[in-house]
Image (tube, rainbow, N blue to C red; front, top):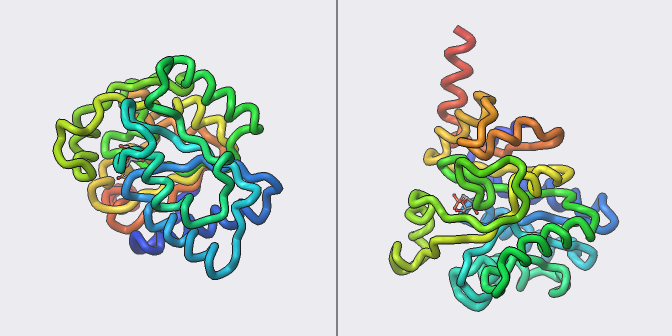
Length: 250
Ligand SMILES: O=P(O)(O)OC[C@H]1O[C@](O)(CO)[C@@H](O)[C@@H]1O
């Protein structure tokens, strides 16, 4: 894994935007894997700014999001579909038919999982997958214990994940208990992965990631086996990693 150490959230967002813009310019029909959560919001703002100022076009881009809550329709303000529209898609020129999120409202969710993986394959696979990380090491909504062989699937959300995401809802009770997520194997098939990490709350997760033990108890650890991962992390997130290095150098 390549590590880019940055000062703070804003620098992380700009560096990540640069990676994506470069990918769009250098790829004929770029396929982007996109993420939600608090972490990529600044990156999306930077992409919108660049689109407005420099005219970077998303006319040839196809996107696949990592995950969606089960039971929330697209219009729900807490659905990830709504998040993507308001934080990115409504402000760039990506064609409506080119954006994909797994649906959490289909009657046959098992079929939706299979269709989602098939659709990614059909477009030729993901060129660049953006990831955030949960404090427990989840990527997408793949909670600890998820099989590394998993394709897109339905998950029961960990209580800690529901609590962390309750800040976006009126109450914890309103946070859905299940989600549909790209699996670990789906994510690992991406040709390139960019993991964004910011803030003190992610220190422990960064320490575990860079310690390098690969275990399903810590889903992000599998990234150590991917040939092309860039981690863009800020000083706060790297606090414990720096301490580890300092101890190793003594
Ligand atoms: O970016 P945040 O809000 O810290 O969330 C981290 C991770 O948790 C999720 O929001 C899921 O809980 C992911 O989408 C994200 O990558």
